[in-house]
Image: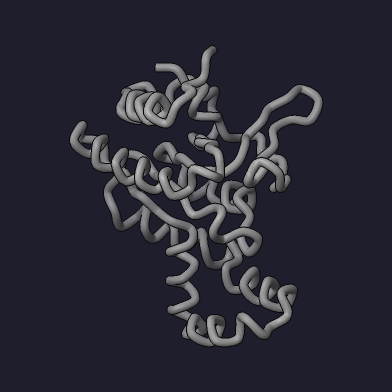
Length: 200
């Protein structure tokens, strides 16, 4: 299969997939969780935000509702709720990076804190599809494979698309791997489909 080469072609492919009955009714997944990765070049980060917002509006006109969630915004919300956002911002420049990472990893733990927040949004907002973005902004405090692993029981009813700044590769030898920014090996994650390979 020839993958869409340009931003415009990829946006068009995404629109066709996300508005298709086959995608929305989770057909062709072989009983796997309806998780999809949309890998893109990290250099396209800012333009990808624009493309995603335009896609949300465009599929909305086609009567498909997107729950558009940013891991970064959710993380800031959790820190604010805990009353420690200002404190973290104030001490960030002089705090040991490892200590800061451990603090944020604890407060933003996917299973204990982040997934319940996503679950609240899923329960309270009618939607047909979930978009998850902000992966690069929350690294290394939150790893995308941890989010996907913990999200399996919470987001299994509707398709979920993770916008991933890097590559998602499959090989018989090594399995599937998420490589953040095209160079940082995030981890093996086998249960998602590359949405650029999804045919309608």
